[in-house]
Image (tube, rainbow, N blue to C red):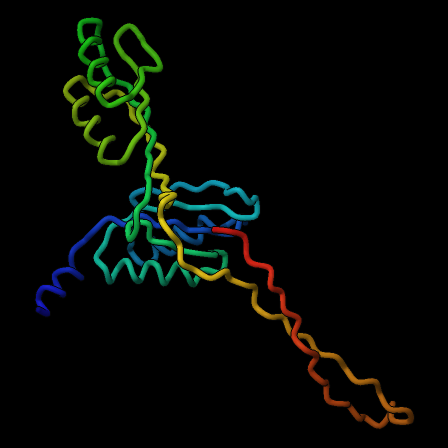
Length: 219
């Protein structure tokens, strides 16, 4: 039984992480630096603002065994500007990748390439004398399959945005709203009359903590 558990822990898998961060300069370099310092590889990284301008969301794709992925999540959580880390591969989620690909396409091959493009629900966005540019969106597996079919014709240029992903709308989140940590402040007692120059320092008395129960912005 232990051998089966060990093999599961050692098996490498794809991991899609949704990382909510504060929208501040240097956040991307901190995360990329952490991966580089510990030898972790980044397969894809996309970052953009959320519905709240104070926060950005990173969608990061990496690979590793369970121990490595757990260390990655813990190290990301230690970065001050990281608000929340979620492993989307542990639940139902939607992912999309956008690709622009320029393919060598003389006139006699245009019918074949258009047929392949239609099957994959892509679109031809530009045509030249001997080349076409195709736009395609979908999962990584769909993009890779289309690229392999286009290789025999000759790929002249390829650009991809990287994976973006969100949790499915049907996914139920059972979580309590997070509240900001309590802030405490102290007040100094007034100096008794006649003791201003005696060096007497009254002990500060704590003032009741001010609780802010406003929840953090949604992730």
